[in-house]
Image (spheres, rainbow, N blue to C red):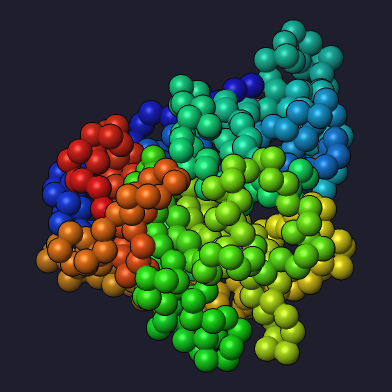
Length: 461
């Protein structure tokens, strides 16, 4: 049974009335990073009305495979039914609302509620209940299956769900940003597949902090990740050195952004994938321009609003071993105004050998896993932002943060006129256009405005 659309939402926080003008100036209210009223509105206006990442098709290869997932804080079962169809079922019994699935992942023909024993097929259909003949003989079982997300669609094997039955399609919502997603996920005929289970960990920070970071916060790497650079695990070009030759940012691409680091023309990098992997890369699935960009790439990182991010990179797990490429995808799961559960998946081309998949997994976990060399740096500083946002001082003084790097006269960098891809590309790492793009999209969703209207109000850049 399909879930009804969510329409109710708390009253507007007062600052939203002036936030458009703040964004035009490159300012952002600090309290967006830890405020209960704002958070409650986000769950209803953003997570209940956006395409939210659930998982990858390769996680459910067989009929009956399932995993527990969330949309906002709502519990769902990500499952491939015996009919082969992938569904996103609300993890709540139709009898008394108890959670019917309490195992993180596995394979099952059906689910039985531990409260009163109502049972459901893995398609969500109601199978039966105890004392059916004595107590439910007139019940129409076809009307009492599990609720399911009204919209479930996939792109490149990435499965998203939307609780708004009237929402535009996933592909329409992704818009021109698909050009960049294709580079990450269509390198080979087999595409990318998940290796191992997603790792999860809690950080005392707001979900938007990680999501905006992956939109192109290149400047933090030289400070936050300095120890990793000094150790030689990553070079300064990959880490986003301000030098123009090391990379560029693309922002205002249908509400999304991406940061790209690359090497000079004529050098094959492909994120440090070895030749036995790159030989499978299929030029027919990418345009010549996309393939040329992939060939020179060191790092790509971006965010699909609201909370799906990716990082395509080649790194070392030891200075004595060669670098290995991998694709990390993650979801910034909201767990309160000042708390986030990070979910992180490691992906590699399907055609790669088992040995390489193990190697890529090791490198991924050692760098951006829960105890990874890069990850530990980020989660050490992000909680400080949430703590500052929760202060009484920030509230009564309406404290604004500076998001002006690269905006207007702040930089000599100008949009590239010969950029072949969509969006606004700026040949500089010293900018925050991607972060401003994220917050313009957030502002549009929170106020119910069309993104084009917000961009007209706030401007590009």
